[in-house]
Length: 98
Image 1 (cartoon, one colour):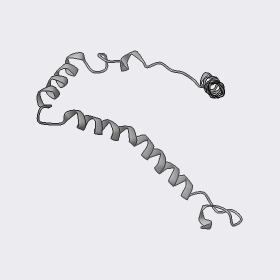
Image 2: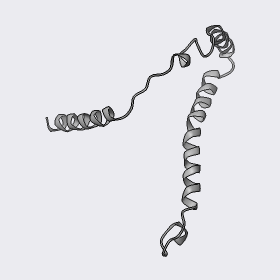
Image 3: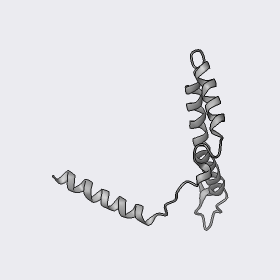
Image 4: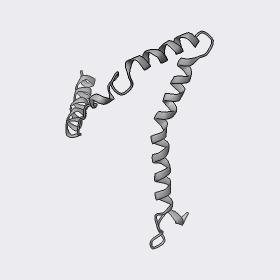
């Protein structure tokens, strides 16, 4: 009973914060079939299904998608590190004080 109350409280807080954030919809040109023609998607799917018996195409595509998903994180880390290294030392306090 207490856990239900706590979970309900946390859910209410998260929903209230989510309501404050801007929401967006995916543009119609980004949906399936309009950015890449459906015939091209069907052709690529047929190629992958033909070679899937001896080549792990699903695994390769999963690895490729995960690497592409990590690029923004790596880029943000590099930008943060660059900014952090260029913060000056003021009155003996700062990043160069180590």
